[in-house]
Amino acid sequence: MTTELNPHAATPAVAPNNGKRRKALLMLLALVVIAAIAWVAYYLMVARWHESTDDAYVQGNVVSITPQTVGTVVSIGAEDGMKVAAGQVLVQLDPNDAKVAYEQAVANLANTVRQVRGLYSAVDAGQADLAARQASVQRARADLKRREGLVADGAVSAEELAHARNELAVLEAGLRATDGNLSRNRALVDATTVANQPQVQAAAAQLRQAYLNLQRAAIVAPVSGHVAKRSVQLGQRVQPGTTLMTIVPLEQVWVDANFKETQLHKMRLGQPVQLHADLYGDDVVYDGKITSLGMGTGSAFALLPAQNASGNWIKIVQRVPVRIELDPKQLASHPLRLGLSMSADVSLRDQNGNVLAQATSQKPVLTTQAYAQQLAEADALIQQVIGDNLPGKHS
Image 1 (spheres, one colour):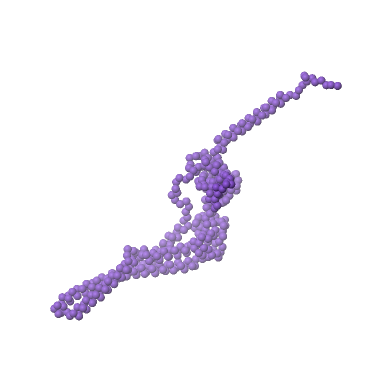
Image 2: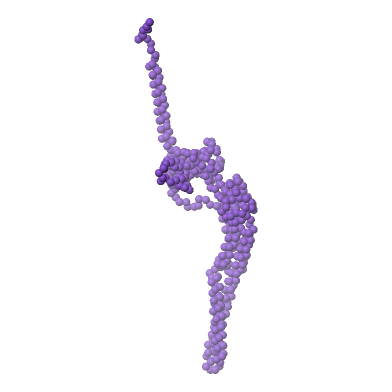
């Protein structure tokens, strides 16, 4: 039994399915084209004007508190995390030895002033003595001349004439000695006052140093900030240069963002930056600006720089630190700690800035007035000691 095929029988509808597939492919292609156009537009209008990195960290000034003199710690005025003000006493050293040296220096200056006053008096007395001896020599010379005129007449004996000559010689020797002593005393005080006489100045310098050593027994904060890493302990014998604690001024922090070298060609000083801290998340946005582009990669300043001349060299994209200054008001509202992770996004649209700073700094970048009064107080004390030991003359 055989089955005959009917050429006119119905076949599956292939054409409509091919049309649907073609339509789907066209739609997919259109979506790809639209996405590509959107990406190109986004790149041309937005992406190419931005560079970002999450290799960024908070940095700041870490001020080490170190003694300027040797001493034993008798009190500690700050603990980790405490806020301190500039000039506040952080550590007190035993001041007894410094007090003894200070009192000795005061007494030495007072004694020196009185001795120098004696030099001025000696000069005055020497001038009077010199004038008297000059008058005596003049009289003796006149007397000798008169006696020499009377020898021929026999009115004066040869013995009397010899005595007159001897007396003149003695008076002239005394005049020379007096003149020499007066010259030596004048050399010590000539063109000076008691206050600027060299011996007084030397004693004043000793008192100034003793006063500074006494003041430095109280170790003060050079800046305002928060205490970190306190290591000093009561009774500890400290030496100059020993780090006792550190102070971190949190209002002076910045961000070092490490960008790849391929991201730097459009970066300029002053360009705006938006930053986020992992501490606060995306809800808090910091506004900053670029203040400097690093002068080298991290490896260039490493203790053991990379040696790229070897045969097994592999190229690695380097990163360069970019310093970003933060808005002080935003920092006050949302403080940052040193070392915190940040993400930074730099807007590159403003190309008017320089790559490197062009102007030199005309004033100090950082200063402290915590120690400014010490020297002024020492000078005032010196003037007081000098004045207390003067009668009013030669001052």
